[in-house]
Image (cartoon, rainbow, N blue to C red; front, side, top):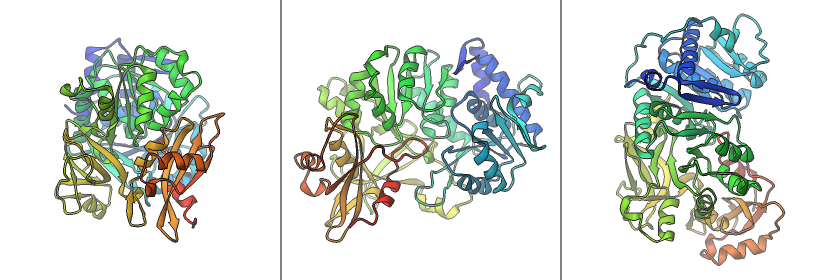
Length: 521
């Protein structure tokens, strides 16, 4: 089934069922589809067609969902943009992919207009929001455009499985942002896989909290619609609002960044709400400490699944869903599996290999790189054949993530290759140290990096946010780590910060921390 048939199927099966909740806006599947079809016609009227790129600069909103489906119905390529990027960074991306249309939220008018001026290929800018004031013939109001279109489902576009459906640009934390191409086959195969793995149905209410420009959440656009579920949209993350929203909208599941979940379980009003509607909480986008997993399960009283994936894989590669024969294991053992990175996703083949390409022993100790293949894996990077050849070798995508695997084939990521610390000739994996830091009752957030050291080459440094109203000293925290880790793994120094830097998706920005302290020693 092509992507453009998913929404019409939902309309046939659930025409009057509530499909989208976005602030005060509530829409049935019939109403939502009507807006999508008019948006598709509006894009076509502005000159967009199959294969053309349409960029979107927007916070979470029903307009974002409409754009995903309208692009699929047109056969165009949607390019979600990170709203935290500067105008210059946006212009670089827009120049690279040359979209014919930029769909943008009026709140971002200054950086959007500056980015358009610095880019090439953009013919039209479409603004959303109640205060929109278009300038010139190339700017348009979103709602005015929709109002001018006729109703009715548009004709099927001439697209196939291998055509590109979406183009996601990496955050650029390792240099120039790369456009990851996802095909119609990638997106629909992943959607079906999540429906099977997570048992999605029309009873589900999905909470779009993580940004829709990032695949931590965006995959659910198609999977939840295919299953006939409800989309509930949170514009920007606020821990208190999300906790209240779970109760108000009877949320059944969502996928959140670990930093979001950590803020929620430590929120002062976390015990003031009813979470009985939740059946599973998923965490993805970064490793999560077992102690945080324990708090999540205790706080929300629902199932928990750790996820791991990449933009290049649509995204899921693993889920920490327990196999049936593991359900009766002791609580601590079950928690260990739940807090692991998980076993391979239904649609991929996954291996952990050493530098010679041999699979490592499944003993939960030997470290190797995760490599994967399957129908959810990108065909490559936009206009970057050499980068594609570096990443995909012999049909396998090399992830750059280092992990161990146990006898049940559950993997646990120990670090990114670029984040591994080599101190005195010994490898230190930052996640192992971070997991210990999160065990300390005064620690709210932690990130471990390597900093230059004249004697050891690199020294282990912990950057820590302490819980509000609590006190903690560097000496006490280092001693805490030395009691639980080999001495060379314990931090040599601790920096206490008010907050840790974040990427646009909400993940802790380690590259930024390393740059801050690169001249230490």
